[in-house]
Amino acid sequence: MYKIMIIEDDKNICDELARLLENHNYQTILLKDFENALHEILEVSPDLILLDINIPYISGEVLLQDLRKESNIPVIMVTSMNSEIDEALSISYGADDYITKPYNPNILLLRIGAVLKRTKTNYQNHELTYKELKFDSQKGMIKKGEIEIELTKNEMILFAYLLNHQNKIVSREELMTILWDNSEYVNENALTVNMSRLRNKLTEIGYENAIDTRKGLGYILL
Image 1 (cartoon, rainbow, N blue to C red):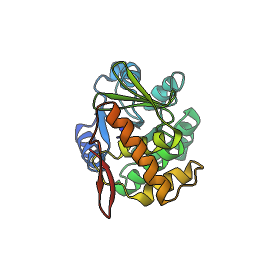
Image 2: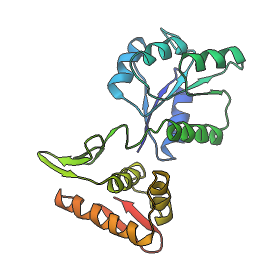
Image 3: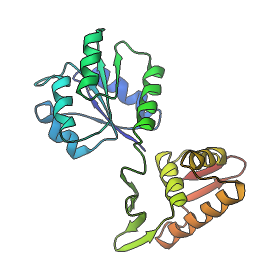
Image 4: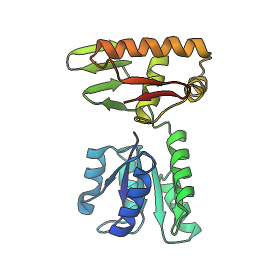
């Protein structure tokens, strides 16, 4: 599940954004300490930030500049200012996208999805967690305590996709498409084999029933 940090000092807007994002399977975190915003961002390490330009103690643009010295976390600037200058400055400071209030919630969701896809905020760049299990994509490992099990590239892609859509049914067509997008040709039989191997490895590490098959629909990571 992607983790999105909302940096906005209007509580009503924060709550509205959080509900919208959580209803679309994102985890949300609200910045609380504006005086130490950069430290809190780096500590939380979100997958994406929605950053308002007008925030207490420091402007959103200055905060973005400071963040870019430390991290490439994707940032979408959010502002009530309808100005090409603000947009140009935000992009020049390192924003990945820009949206003006009042915005259409569906457009915002589309932009979030596009930025996450474009910046590849996925299994390739992050250590993901599933219950007590850690998924280290750099090493190609799943680990629990001292137990480590190696995953193949296809197993990594499948597990990361299921994990980012946890508790939602993912169709076989979606999984074959995501494998194809990663330059791997996969047919129905190959997907079944890779899924079986992934399940066996999860069983080895103590998660026997993690992936459930929903007949005629696909798979779900519980």
